[in-house]
Length: 244
Image 1 (cartoon, rainbow, N blue to C red):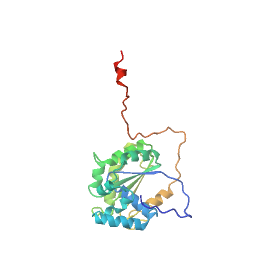
Image 2 (tube, rainbow, N blue to C red):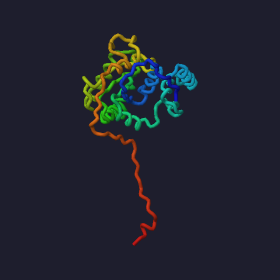
Image 3 (cartoon, one colour):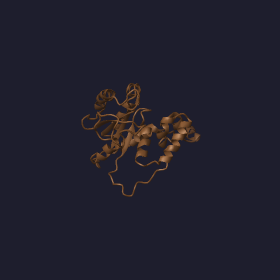
Image 4 (cartoon, rainbow, N blue to C red):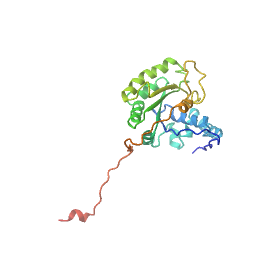
């Protein structure tokens, strides 16, 4: 596990918020997570520098941020989170106050994740079923050469995604908030965007800090996520079946 720096003693106390990151494989969830950990001081710079050197040795220069979260060798070799992701995601969604749906704006990648067989639809539906009421959609990889912070591409992704999210049960006016970002460079995660003029909202972390307190029901139904099931055979001695 990466070395985690302790929080400053004068850090403001904030309400604890459970957040689950969901989205299609390779949308950038782990990279965004690693970048957030670095930007907030949860991972030391020299630790990431070590990961960056190791990633370059394997010709995986753009993967080093995700290594703050994907720590086993299989995940690092494949470049994606593989260890119990779906069970952990379902369990996390059942406890989450809000979900962060990460989509890739890169040409072709959004379509792959959203169309039949992609995980964007599946994860959004699972989050809603698990009781998540609020959704932040991070339109990632806006810095990709196929996108270059294009407002047209950003709006195209929104126009395709919103009708489905509405069908699932999210209210576009109250429950969903879209924002562009780049997990690789950290753009619009902590500091305001300077790459494009059309986005006037807050960066991701500031937006989280500005959210009102969440209403948590103490008398609602209990949700128990089932992540696996087993068929149990009852063993009996042979003599049991030979009786009579």
